[in-house]
Length: 146
Image (tube, rainbow, N blue to C red; front, side, top):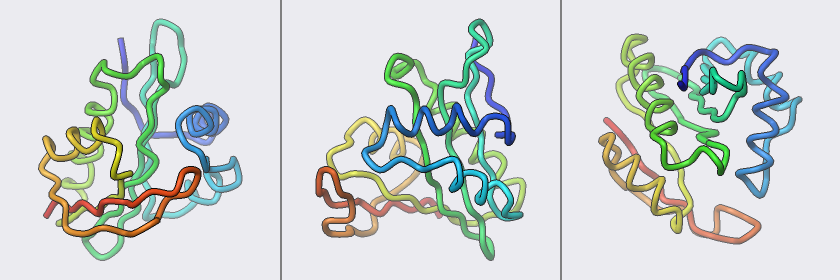
C-alpha cells in the first residue's frame, strides 16, 4: 500500500536517491534542505508501507495565489501504478485548500506519460521553453492549470 504524506527532513536522502534515478540533473541534499525551510514550499512523498520505502516525490512553491510544481518523480520500478497521480492529487487538494488559484509546471516535450497525466488533471499547454533541459537538450512544455 502506498501512503502520500508531507515530506520531512528525514526524507531528504531518499528524495535525493529518487532524483538521481529519475533526472539527469538531480537536486542535491542542500537544495532540498534549503527548499524545505521555505514557508511557501510544500513537498510530498509516496511511501511503500510494506517496504517502509519512499518511492516518489513532488512539490510546489506558492507565491501570491499561484504555484510552481516541481520534482515530480517516481522510482522506475514503481511507475505505472498511479503513484504520480496520487502525489499530484494530494498536491492539488492541498494547494486548493491554501487558496492557490493557478499552478504551472514544465515537462520535457518527449515525456508523453507525464504530459498525459498532467493533461488528465486539467493542465493545459500554454508555451514552450526552447532547449530548456540539458542532458539531453530538449524543449520544455509550459503547462498551466487555472
